[in-house]
Image (cartoon, rainbow, N blue to C red):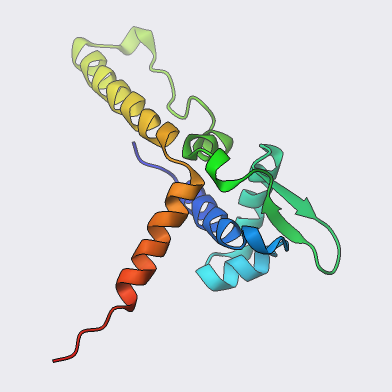
Length: 145
């Protein structure tokens, strides 16, 4: 299963929000866009989709921005994918042009899709924050000879 750029940007933005979650302050789209090198206009659209899905909340005003609507452990990665791609991201084949070969390929892709959705359902935003922090710590290690 290949995820869109939209989902990638959403996950990156959500990671930023999750890491700042305990501060209790909203984060602006421009802050996230600059720190992660994401086009601001595109990120703004992605954030609107996440807001409509109830994953994030927005706060207006000079000190406004976005913050998580739930705790990081409550946000499953499958919720993010569904919010941006819909539940059925794959189009249905035309039954009139369906050969045994095409049906076989579709069956395999459907099995892969189900497996990937199960994995996304098991992982939360908190899991991603933990992995991100581990990567940051491992990249800070320097070896001297």
